[in-house]
Amino acid sequence: MTNEAPRWSIPESWVWTTMSEVAEIVGGSTPSTDEPENFASSGIPWITPADLSGYKAKVISRGSRDISEKGLADSSTRLMPAGTVLFSSRAPIGYVAIAANPVTTNQGFKSFVLSKGVLPDYAYYWLIRAKNLLSEFASGTTFLEISGKRARQIPLLIAPIDEQRRIVDAIESLLPKLDAAVAALERVRANLKRYRASVLKAAVEGRLVPTEAELARKEGRDFEPASALLDRILAERRRRWEETELARMNASRKPPKDDRWKSKYREPIAPDTSALPQLPNGWSWMTADQCTDQITDGEHITPPRTDNGVFLLSARNVQDGRLALDIVDYISESVFEQLSTRLSMKPGDVLLSCSGSVGRSCVVPEGIRFALVRSVAVLKPVVPIGTYLSFVLRSLFLQRQIDRKKTQTAQANIFQGKIRTLVFPLPPLPEQCRIVSEIERLLSVTDETDLSVKNAAQRCDRLRQSILKWAFEGKLVDQNPNDEPASVLVERIRAERVAAAPSRKFRKSNTREAEAAK
Image (cartoon, rainbow, N blue to C red):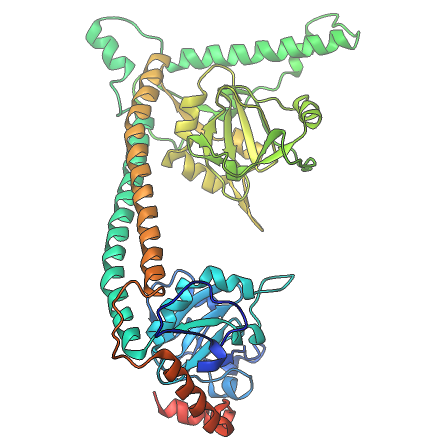
């Protein structure tokens, strides 16, 4: 019986026990990687936690690498029989699979070779059900791990053997239906993602709404081409620089004597259009540098955090089209005021995640104050076209540019100099407004659908957990009073293990027999 109190009430025919009472607990090992002959292209199956990352099947036959007979002999890993329940005990804790054939594992597992009377499938579902409970058995500083001693103490809820079979059958009649529903929801989300991409693609290619040139021709009027808009943006950009520079010189009591100071103005980077596709009539190419008067990023030295105050946002908070504020850091008012002297965000500015997860963008909304760390860049448009820029940044055309320009070391980054060279298609201003309005209309529908799909997926996940919860509370299938009580089963297992004690522990000498059992 476990040393810990039962976690919930159970049927009278059930019993709480521990893994050590009904299973041989086997650790794993890694043969020396300095000796290539320890590994084989087709040898003894050797499984690591990485092999179970994203793995959804219940049984597994082998991992990405095999070890050789020499690797088995020269390491402390064991060859375990088919039906062994593999449980990752670190990095991370909680992956579960059943060995389809004799396998070995690395040191990231505590595997359970179950006694007759405990079904591997039953134990498999129990370990999935008890994953959160099992985190209490982990310890460690560098990373959490369940030790061999603690693995022996893992609680196991035993039902009568026939009821174990009924429980497994019931679970496996229900979960595939949930899996099918989740797969259908994932297909819907994939289709929504493709639809968003197609909307943005049409927008940047001038196919989403009638172009200004087309409307002007039909209506018999002139229109301002994007080249004229760009000229106005560039003129305003220079005017702002001159205004700021003149104010700086006057503040330092060194007013200019003539206009030569104006030659210090840095002309923005112009686009190289030689390899760019043809634009619709009336459109122009422009760079991020041309349409902004500042491109910078957040604080490179992270300011001291507080429990509350003003938001301190990072790349994780910048999602496509919105700020995600469910997980935020804070700084004090005084620190915020200090940081604002260097960088102050205004509604309409464009935020771009520039480190780690590079390429997500949104517009600064009204009514929010925040500072940034360096994983977020800010693009300050000269004229209010931030919403359009943010949408274009999300298009495949700009995402491909970002992918080409970002660096990849320990993590991906796109630096300010590269951001300035990003090239945008610029439509005439009235057309730009229609494009933004149509994108918002179309994507609002997809966002609502996506939210509904996400909620449905969460309900499926909760139902999956409920099925497993009911299964191990004795509520998923009926109890049969004719079933042998689990307490009798556990006592028989205990007696059989005591009788077999001299040969129970795995030794190198029995690896050949296990191999023969393939």
